[in-house]
Structure formats: structure tokens, C-alpha cells
Length: 137
Image (tube, rainbow, N blue to C red; front, side, top):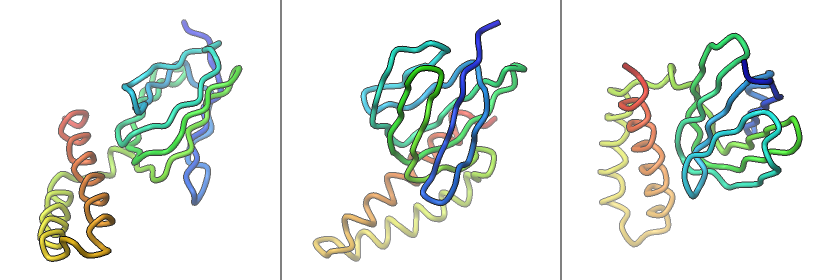
């Protein structure tokens, strides 16, 4: 059995997770990377994607994050996420509806100040939908 280390997932609103775990896989900006106990120190930006957590009892948990930073140092791995949502709380049909609204809104706002914000929201919703299709059965 792998050794445990502390994993904290923090959003701007609160501490979402703070548990001993045996493994965390994080969607880094240059690709996914895994963290085990005694990992070398690391600071990385993260892209929108799924953090996969394995607890000491073998149970697995998945959380969608829409970006942020990961800090691995000693026996602690901390993710500071822009947004974090339990993957089980995402619904493909709801995401498709929001994506349709954002696409229509984007077409109406091309060249306007809102375009960048709408495009970013659309990217996040598409990443959420991809995560649901990839990890939820």
C-alpha cells in the first residue's frame, strides 16, 4: 500500500477537501501529472480538467477544476482552484443547454467587451462536458 500524504483543494469560497490520500492526478498546464507521497517539490499552473483523488481506503473521487495552481511540497499537495465542482454534480444535458446559450450569446457579442468573458465561459463548459463524457458512465 502506498504511503499517505495531505491533499487540500481550495477554492476562492472555501476549503473543499482536506484529507490524507495516497495519490492525486492533476491536470497540469503541460499535461496531467501524478502526485504520490514524498513527491519532489513542484509548483504548476493547472488547466480545466479533472483531479482524480485516491483515498487511503482505495476509494476514488473526481473533481472538475477550471484552472488554478498546484503546489506540492513535502507531505502536502495543495490545489488552489478558480472553480471546483464534484464531477457527480455535473449533468451532460444541462451543460449542453448552457453551451448552446453561450454559443448564441458569443455570436451576438463578437468584437464587444463581453466576447472574451463569454469565450472563456464556453471553454470551461466544453471542458466540463468532455469530463462528464470521459469519466461518468
